[in-house]
Length: 176
Ligand code: HEM
Ligand code: HEM
Image 1 (cartoon, helix red, strand yellow):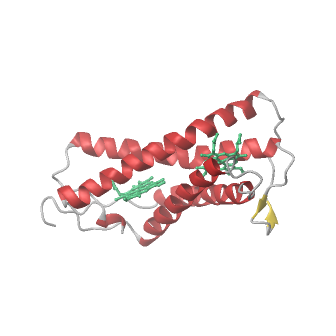
Image 2 (cartoon, helix red, strand yellow):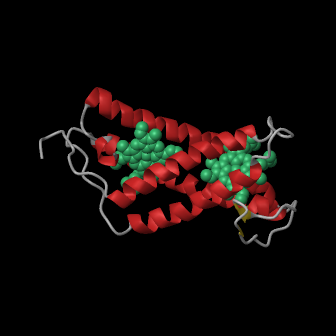
Image 3 (cartoon, protein in one colour):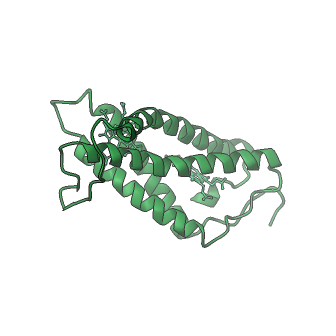
């Protein structure tokens, strides 16, 4: 492999899951933020909940799959600090990919509405009580977490674009 150029790609499963989850998360942040302004016009919450629960299932699948392979190497031109930063952001993204759906699930379980997957089948509700500390904490985390996840994802995407257009070191191509 040429020094400074990464040629090996993430495997097909990792790439498919990465892009499916990325699109679903970005759509869901938009739906979450638009649900109140559009209240009375269109009910976005059922779709938001179903997409969020899909993100949870796909993220668990992705993490299990992640444990079965080693990521392609970084180009040698990247410093130890850059690699460490990239890995820390990935860990944070994985945590939010689980924490956002889980806190949403806790919140939705305390409400009166049924939890369905696009109206096709019911999803189980957790045994939690409205007004409990867990539900309140989840609500608080979910509201702030959406913005934090968006900031992380934008920073992560900006770094990927910098690798592609400025450094031209093949890092983005590993995920395409
Ligand atoms: C990819 C996963 C998810 C993301 C990124 C996400 C993001 C968001 C965002 C940004 C908001 C708006 C928060 C605000 O304006 O205060 C929101 C609200 C909400 N989300 Fe999620 N969400 C996800 C998954 C879920 C799931 C799985 C459920 C339930 C099963 C859920 C239930 C809710 C509810 C009930 C609200 C409204 C909260 C309120 O109005 O107080 N979310 N979500
Ligand atoms: C909500 C959106 C996104 C999430 C949650 C996300 C999450 C992740 C995670 C967790 C990894 C680590 C993969 C692993 O080694 O296990 C990763 C890698 C990667 N992502 Fe994203 N991603 C998102 C959006 C994007 C976007 C928009 C781009 C491109 C502009 C991008 C480009 C990449 C690249 C190039 C890698 C491999 C980088 C490396 O190995 O350091 N991602 N992503």
